[in-house]
Image (cartoon, rainbow, N blue to C red):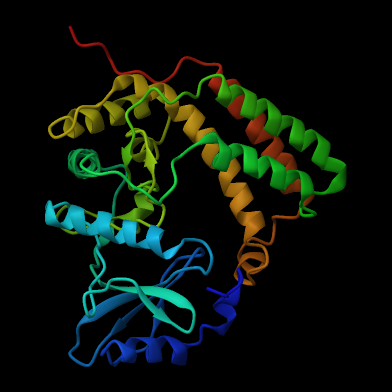
Length: 328
């Protein structure tokens, strides 16, 4: 691959349709852009009125072997009747190439937005996450990364030090807050938990509802502790989160055992995501879509808020972790 980080500028509608035509698909509708900053994703209809989604992967983010492991995981889940959007094969290949782009085609599954406040839906999701992890534990990733402090904390810290996007007058205070947050996470982070293949980015936006949950977008599939796929579903105050967690875990354990000691990783994982997300925005700043959609990134108010958010998360990490109600 010879593309740089923002070669999506060369990905024109004609290029997309030519790439699909090369695989025997004739686009008979417009290309509807779906919400995705990391990749470029479009819905369309072919001449037989079948609906598809095509996903063009961001150049240089994943190697071919890593994308193929994402596809293999999705197909493993599909074979185990876990509802997931899995790629279609063309001439026995799910990973396709055109003009230096990697891309894949998926059936358009459709569906409503998962209702995070609907406890019945939350229970269903917990049950299917148990099945998803049951499949995830059968094999290991060889090429996709683990969830760990190096990628999520140490490398972003190095990026923050050199980026010009953080106003110079605020950088020292911000970096001190980052260092405090890293120290607080490192005091609680350890690798004594079982690691397995995960969805990796299992928030409400990556779950559709079609008479039950449908998991989409395994682009961030990684190896890590099971709780990574649970904690992003929690919202509200501590009491509400505890009730949601108890429902999810009870349903989850119909298919997979859950190690409750992993609950102590929820706030460290949240802190890691906060740091990683900021670094992701900085890394993508050369993509014209990012300054357009995140114009506040280089503002002083933003970095002051981020400094406070990090310091607040340091305080949260000092509190007792979320726990389930004891059963007698």
